[in-house]
Length: 165
Image (cartoon, rainbow, N blue to C red):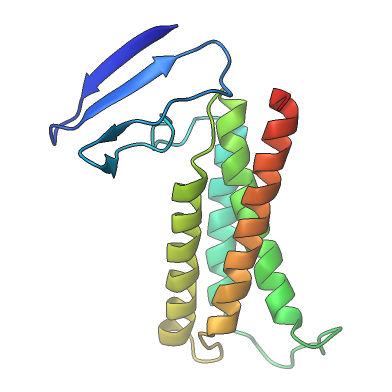
């Protein structure tokens, strides 16, 4: 075990204890503010899951902002669009959460959930402002957040099982 101290530009000190088992990370707190979530740096790892998450994000924006042309098929059940929103965000945040363990780091669940909240708000606002045939809906945003929360919960359970906890 070794301790690493790094000084950031804003004067905050980042302290990480490097251990062989990536399942255990300390919490770094300075002046009452979390500078990192359980010692994990807030940068995405460079691996196939990050690439897939980035590609999925492009497809997510394309699909959510695409204008509906002509006659739309009848949905198979009521509120089908909510299930689609949930599934899209589940896939996005499952891929994002999987990128960290593949690189030997603990996923920053809180930061990913904040990213989900911002992405849900941004996509619904963009649908409302930038499209003529689509509208922003709070229930769509709630379905987005439910999908992201389910993905992050499943990712944390899978990680716990794989770490033997």
